[in-house]
Length: 263
Image: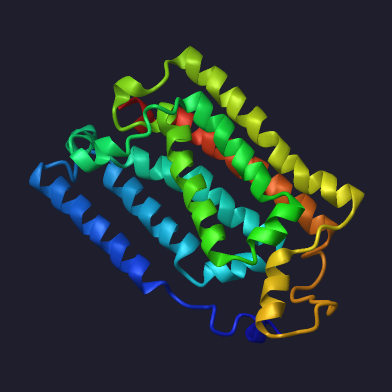
């Protein structure tokens, strides 16, 4: 059943791989030319961020993440809570200044969106995305779902900016950082609690499995149980909420205490 449902979906996204490789090559060419490659761990952080980005949205792991709420929240957590700070911390200030001086970058600069506003916007969009009704609708339209995830990904960079900005002058001071960390945990809490509360009240069906069933032309009322319990049960939903809270909190703690954050 698993092979049937994922038939044709366990593919590697080659265009995205090409883009990621090109970004990586351009990054290392810059680092080598400016003799920055061996100075610190920034190249390692940036490379890890690119690798995780491709694994999260360009590898067969994307399709596998649809099999359960827990897998899905791990993928979402990496995409929004781990990859952005890794990429930002991996960009040296010299490269950042070179990038922002480009006309195209200035045109689409998100500096008008304050970090606090971006945090509220991201939290609201993230909560909306995981509301059962909204998720069931948007999961049926790949174009809108991809666009929605892309918007969240872009906003997440602005959300992490005051903690991991390549320009150290734009990072929050210790007092502001502490307040921002508390706000980040508080604003994202509703999305985490959504799965836990839904699990306590009633089971929330996995819309991605319904989409796969439609792809196979299975009856609408057919019961799909790919993974054994507790996957796709109320326990899986509770675990998904706990996983997201844990990964988000861990990322905040590691990022705020990282030596790279003070370099």
